[in-house]
Length: 223
Image (cartoon, rainbow, N blue to C red; front, side):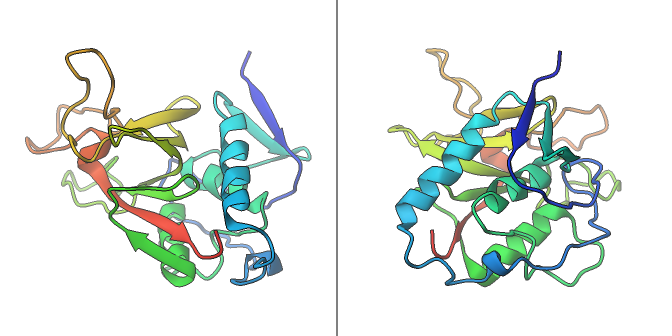
């Protein structure tokens, strides 16, 4: 039986096909998403709370909010987690009518926070990826911002553990920017998970691991 997770808030999200489908019906910005609204709340506590909400979703294959189904893709799930804590990651995004949810979130962070390349990441940061699938269908690896997740922690060897909606459910994935092209060490530890499916038509230089498709981290102001 599919595992369902209930979130105690209502959110209207456009139905998306895949992680990077265009968002057709964008909701109005929520008042709580305005920058600087929660300065009295300890930032580290808010980050920890966001990570706890994400961790509770691990393994879920269906998400509902007060009986209303949420867009079940990487952007919709990431947005839903932040909405639980008063931040709408789609607010103030790009005006591009063809933008997908990942690009809306990336634009929001550009406006209300910062994009950085790490390699250090903090719990509650966002992590963005390029080229996780052929978004425009042209058979070329030229598809920026097609996946997003939430950083849970970073291990001593630099491996970032992040939570994201992937192929079958919401899962923990790994990424190590120090060894971006290594899937598994000789000792058996996974450094970089596969995040793009292999296709016989892929160009020879196509990347498939999280480290090789990494686009950047995002830190939201006030967190």
